[in-house]
Structures are given as structure tokens and as C-alpha cells.
Image 1 (spheres, one colour):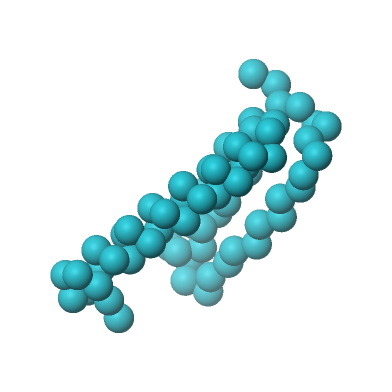
Image 2: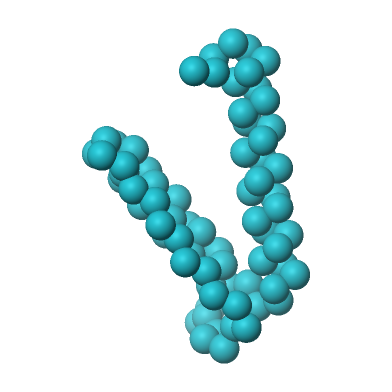
Length: 71
């Protein structure tokens, strides 16, 4: 499915790491974010997608704290 180029919003993502393995993972994550965001036309859906990512991140971090793995 081709993506539309007339979205009314713009996303700019910047992530990097000096650690080669982490930098590679960040690159894959960045590419996935771009892929997903490029397919979303409605800004409200973008908001919902980002809120979902934030919720999952908070849940994951809470799990680290709960099991004593937080550094």
C-alpha cells in the first residue's frame, strides 16, 4: 500500500547510541516508527498510537521496578 504524502503533521525522530548493538536496535525501532506513522493519516490516530507506545513503555518500566531490575 502506497503512503500518502499530504499528511497535515510531521514527525522527526532522532535516536543514537555509542553502543553498536543498541544503535542498531534504535535504528530498527526508528524505522518501524516511521513505517507506522507514514501509514496513519488522521492526527488523532497518531496521538492514539503515541499514547499506546507511552502506556506500554510505562508498563514495562513498572515491571522492572517491581522485580528489582531497575538500574
